Image (cartoon, rainbow over the protein chains, first blue to last red):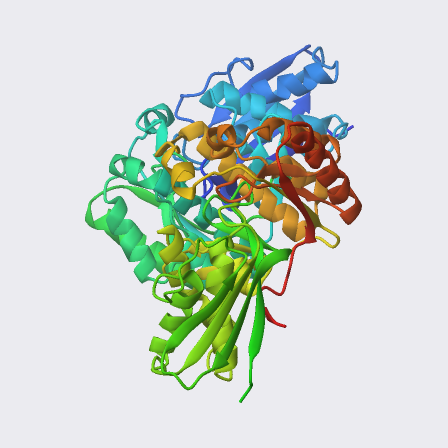
Length: 310
Length: 310
């Protein structure tokens, strides 16, 4: 029996421009850390939370990391087990980078490790989904699945968790910038029209299909032509100050595409190499610096591992 | 210089359930034949049309096969060249099987062969598109492209003809049934809502993505789960008598999916083997036989060659 388990669950980019609610990819960083250990006191307790600015509850039933872990413990008939959990948030909350997904994944993944791995990693997905649901009210796996499993994933169906990994061309990198402005996911949802014009639907469908083909064929040109969100981005862009300037400068710097990460306000750019991602990232930074908006930049390959034990 | 050139251009299944206006695949049969030969009389003349029931014009400017050929001749500066063309329609018109695309492709492909192949096959696509436009009024390549080039194709963009071939699992077959009822393409278009509910858009997007992943991975189960049109089929099904019975019986016979071919009234089923396609085809036939509706059944693999010289 291990004395203590420490795990990391990464940030992720939901939607990935052409896969609204169905596609996402994991980053190497930032991410959340969870530490768990057995305790003599029965039940799961959260004993420490850092990096959340006092925003997250200690009650495990109300805490994303605690809730996903509890659901696993219930499933295993181990909910009486005495466990202490620490949640160290090392990524911004409400950033569009899958913060709640990272906590949900880290919580359940850590407890599964502590118990000697009774379930396989992929079988933790339903429990992590429940943690994500607690935070976001939506049963979407486009952050949770890549956060847990790593990679660029497509979720065909969220109920049956029909999840598929896409190949990613060697050397592909993302530049992700988080401008410190507040966009509430529920606002980002509520401004969306509940109908899509047929023509836009056809165009976006074609782009999604072509993006996937580009990934399979390592066809960088095609990925670049396809990585265009004609439906969601135009509706949400106004929630993010300077969005179109940031996008334009990233594309000028050589990015294949640039769009909103999840519900925003983070913005991601995909690039064919680390160097281009860094160039695009620096260009994006300059826009927010000039505008006097605080921001954080992350340069990362597509993380293929997902949650890991540290 | 060849005395006479005879070519074949195949029928095709547009939309393929989850790729409305952007995806299609070619069949081995039925299809159109065009014969061309040089003549001493300047200009392109259509000298014979068979199998069209008197419905198609002899004026090459008004005839799909003639028009695509004329556009090629103009492009080559050869429009004074004396050429005789025969069009032998060997497939039903207005069937949803890409009849006009087959004629457009056969016309331009035949003339290109007669002239000693000045253009590569794929470069004939814009001319074939113009023939298709003459017939359908729509610039969609989802029939023309597979008819010319063969295969299961995705068209990312119809203007730049950004066309991509998808892999097809070994042994995959289609059963396609044409019930002899009239559905005009323009009616099939006009009944479509010009907006798609956001939820359906997400679902269809997921299905298209998963269908493509299934094709790349030869994942027959995934192809079956993904091959569901939740947007167009429900709107058009009522134009085709007994559609849902036909679909149900095809699925019961083991087909992976079953939907409307193009704008209908033809119905296609995809199957993992020739035997299953035959079983599904026979089951589909029984519905129309019982209902007293004349019909034609075609069992075909995905044709990878497209237009060919006979």
